[in-house]
Length: 239
Image 1 (spheres, rainbow, N blue to C red):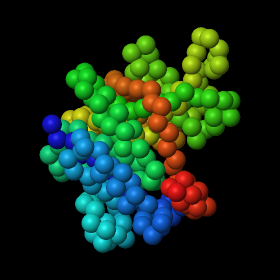
Image 2: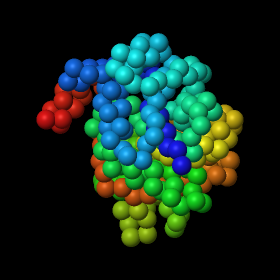
Image 3: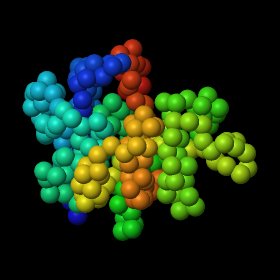
Image 4: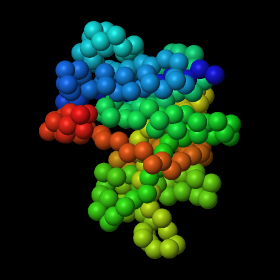
């Protein structure tokens, strides 16, 4: 069983151009993510998947394996899928390139969801704690069935009776594991209507094609960097 970790890294970002190369304690952000992933004993290889030569150059300078991928990819999963099409692995991980504080144990958790041979696509979920998170469109809400498989993912407030004894609100944690054939199928489908309607929630592409996404509850918390001013906070947390 060969497990390959992939860190999608785009240079272009409306809120933070060049984010993967932002310096944190003298090293680029993507290096910190790469080093955290290296601490996971189950991972056999790690690649940074990018569409920009500046990021490729940075990876070469810092000893990180990297792969140039298409500029046409609309999601991180598509970029991971291209890596899967060009490498020989069994399980692939989509590790967010803007989470330099990610806990290796969180990565291990999403790997081991695939110990269940029926699962081909997996991610993590956490309980929504308050109304502000519940109504925030930047927080992806997950509606799940009794097995923990996703029924639907949305930026809207869902389910309707959040906070009642009848319904529990969950948000999606953006860390994924996939079996190789699933990724190849995913890439071949192209963006789906529900994916586009929810402003790029790529998980809905799989659901719309009748495939399952297993979501396991996690207690791990991480911190994603969205804006340049958050770099100082990350450096403080690293202390």
